[in-house]
Amino acid sequence: MITKPDPLALGPILYTQTVNRWVKEKPEILYRIHDYLVQYIDGDWGDLDEDDWQANIDTIRRKTPNGRLMGAYKLTDDKRLWIITDGYGMQDEGVSCCYTTILSPDDY
Image (cartoon, rainbow, N blue to C red; front, side, top):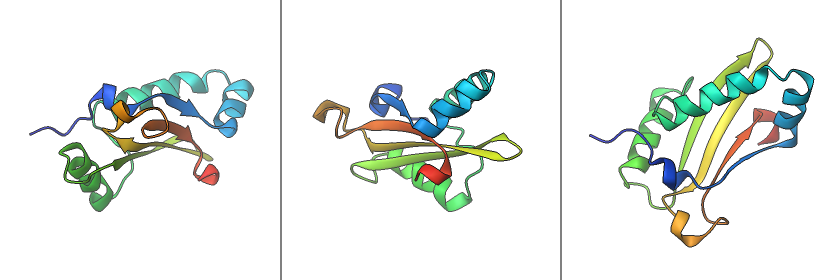
């Protein structure tokens, strides 16, 4: 059974100004963000509850049209990181339909 997202179906990967500020303040955070993005692409969505994890699997299996994927990760003791793909599988429709954003929960 497929439980990993298709990397090509994630669209462009963007990040918020908050994440950009974190990296400027502590450049080594970029390595953690990279590792979490690799986990996300590998189907490891971090600190999600069972329902959200299953929603990701359903989206990947196309049970959710125009779906959303989400991952939640602990970046530091005081910082959480979310990775969200909107419009999963809609990459052929254009950038405005499918993209992945790396953000702080406060950015949501």
